[in-house]
Length: 335
Ligand code: NAD
Ligand code: TDX
Image 1: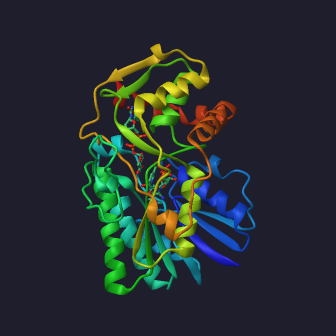
Image 2: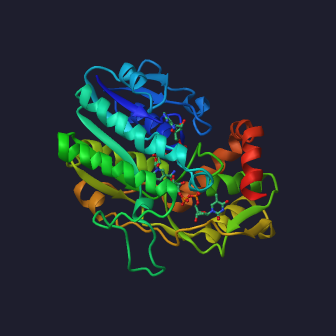
Image 3: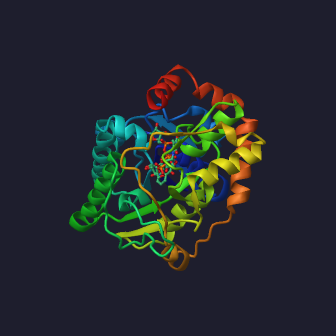
């Protein structure tokens, strides 16, 4: 049995990764280290095989706690833990610098201290900024880092620290940069679950600006499979851009959800644009396709329907989240 250390494994993508590894990789045990911030949810870990999964509540900025939880003879750290919502970073950036920057450095130091064999940093396409609105420009692994939001800047800073650990100390590192994920258990501050939750309750659907910003959507399990392949087959020190070649304008995404739920388009409400709103993200996935032999397995139509079905079938999950703290956030963000 190999042991891996997953941070942020009670969040949206981290919990999907934990599930995928437990389901599909038989010789791996997981220590799942998560601070359970507003975005971390123990409900996301229900039903896991507890003989191979151990949850530890802890903060990646707390070095003693990390060193204590990090198992001896650890195969890899997968760092999913982050403050992940762009709008929250616009309202208050400090938490983003702490967790996303300092937390990553503490994990890198801990990896060195305990001779962890590989460090996988889960990064984002947003570190590369924004693209013009034509079909010919894409993010590649050699695109310059030009982050535009405090969130993206903190993730770019983390990438630099990962690179520095590799160059200076020879830490075996992999960076993955993915586009917008969607799927089960995503916190309803992000576009797709927010629209599904509001539409299910016949509430208005806030669309920023003209609704024509483009995101490159990927089903969360496809992202997680690519991360595992990058860990297994990736070259030390390299970055891998992950995307399913699935660009959509926000307004198209919102209308597709309304149609699937049989709700009227009149619920859509155009609201003030996000400051510094990146216009378009689009990923050239040639490197993960050719070097890692990865391909997405879920089409947009299948993935969106699966996601909507999950939210319809798990209304208690969403009700528990849409509590007082969420309501306060929503009011502050949307008025
Ligand atoms: P999320 O907000 O759903 O989950 C983040 C998790 O990290 C939560 O469980 C939270 O409790 C935990 N966490 C936060 N601060 C922590 C700390 N200081 N110590 C320990 N745990 C802490 O985020 P997500 O959407 O699952 O994103 C996971 C990772 O993937 C992030 O690093 C994010 O930058 C990256 N990413 C996300 C997307 C996307 O579309 N959601 C796309 C590309 C990359
Ligand atoms: O209420 C909304 N209305 C709206 O029009 C929200 C929450 C979003 N939007 C727009 C903004 C974006 O153009 O929808 C698009 C998607 O927004 P988010 O879900 O907030 O995602 P984004 O800002 O694109 O960032 C996401 O992808 C990259 C994740 O949140 C990041 O963690 C990831 O790194």
